[in-house]
Length: 191
Ligand SMILES: Cc1cc2nc3c(=O)[nH]c(=O)nc-3n(C[C@H](O)[C@H](O)[C@H](O)COP(=O)(O)O)c2cc1C
Image (cartoon, rainbow, N blue to C red; front, side):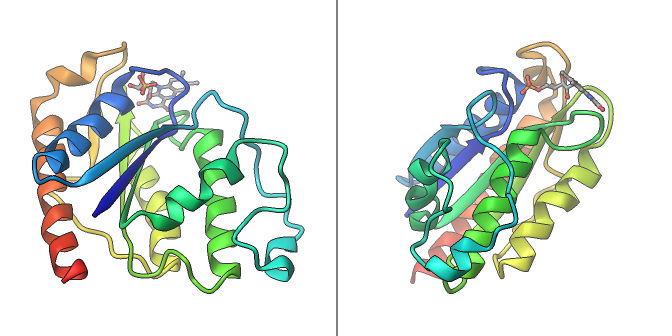
């Protein structure tokens, strides 16, 4: 079983990363292989809408000028994909949106490569935006026929400065519970 987490925050070691790591740590206790991939602050551009991926059918984006193709196979080989982003003007970061659009289109163009994988979206916020961002992240999961587990509340935590999210005990507990639900589902799917 392999789970990857994608950090869409450009602030490395920040609140989004803390929440993602809590999920990964919990899964590791069940001997699940995990990996955190940083896309926030990296070179990753949006979908250019050329549909060359649909024609080429090579599991890649036709643009090799950024990091996306280097991480695509890891995404397609994972059993669960966790997307983390801070709330930026009540929306996901541009890096996360770029990732979602291009991964989603390449996957659909190559025979539904995300189908039946598990997907979970996680949001760090100072005050607001979290629930609609979680819905946006779910759009790609559900349109890709992925399975989205719930937790005790929406997967969001409150914090502004780096590390502040650790004081949001309910959010941290929610991450642990989310990880447990992902593991429960993984066991059923991988049987
Ligand atoms: C450009 C920018 C826009 C932001 N907009 C919002 C917002 O609309 N709502 C909110 O609650 N927090 C907003 N924040 C605060 C971040 O979501 C918050 O600090 C979060 O914990 C950052 O997570 P990170 O440490 O993983 O980067 C904004 C921060 C930045 C830098």
